[in-house]
Length: 296
Image (cartoon, rainbow, N blue to C red):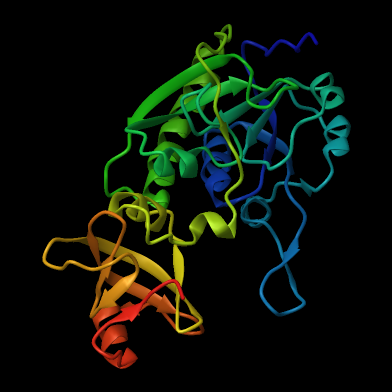
């Protein structure tokens, strides 16, 4: 498939994005005087127990800015634009759409490492020391297009997923605006072995206490780590390493928990049906017989 050329000067774009991480680039494009003729985003979804549907974060922002919104890719053909900008849209762009409008994507990894749905989550879980952000050409294959700009960013040991997203979003905005201001130029083909970041599931967030303290800490940094105690779910929001207890995997004494390698201390937890709370207060109210077991 031959991809369409990007004009040297882009003045009108269509924006495709869905979650919170895609809000900041939309705002930056708008604030820099580039006309956004249409925003295409995911469908409104029901969240929680109520029947009310909630719009995507990108849709909410677009409506604030007064930009037309659609849930249909086909509507791109009805507006004037020179380029499509894709940020975490959530669906592959079909070949027929790429024959109508050239598209670029802000992708949050150092391609070709971590193509796919959850690049930052997989980078943290794998213990990568570096990640990055790319402005890439959208091709019919998943995240396989050439690179216009790339920025490497270190992953600090304490970086949460949210903190990493903020850093990479800011860098991605800079790269994208540089492309608009100086021209995109010719994309450079990706080099190296591709790895794929499959979607994160609830099971990926479940803490396996037979793993090392380091591996458990990586899961907790994603913000949704969970375990069970006395048959009830407990979210683990913040932990730190502990060196003064010798506990079996999952064994809990106060706020200290044993792992397959090392011991951690719970700092902040969220019991089922309750607000987040200090782990000491939670442990004091638990009234364990000296020691309990997580994961049961």
